[in-house]
Image (cartoon, rainbow, N blue to C red; front, side, top):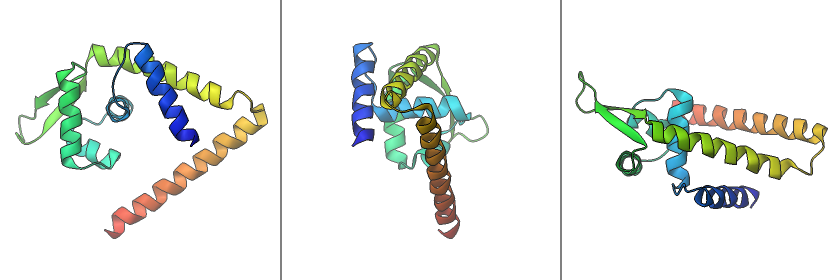
Length: 139
């Protein structure tokens, strides 16, 4: 429930600031910015979405001027994705809003509780990644 409330607040705050992208669109922009990923296939693997979902999301972002696609000269089936100046401005705003949401979420926690909370989240994320990697190897 906390995750839903936080995501809802972030979406409403972004809309108030003139950004009306879905959470999936924002995640794509964030993943492209943070990871250096450049293809839809790589995005699919990271975001755990199917080919059609990624294609629709990327097409929407391209249409709105948030990213550009350039066909790979060696492999015409593949396209490289790059962020635009417009998406960089949106990402800057998104990261600020995300930080505000975290500050609101942790406002009533002591410093020690915040450290413990972050430690537990880090462990949970590592556990998730370990299990996901194991599942991919077994598949």
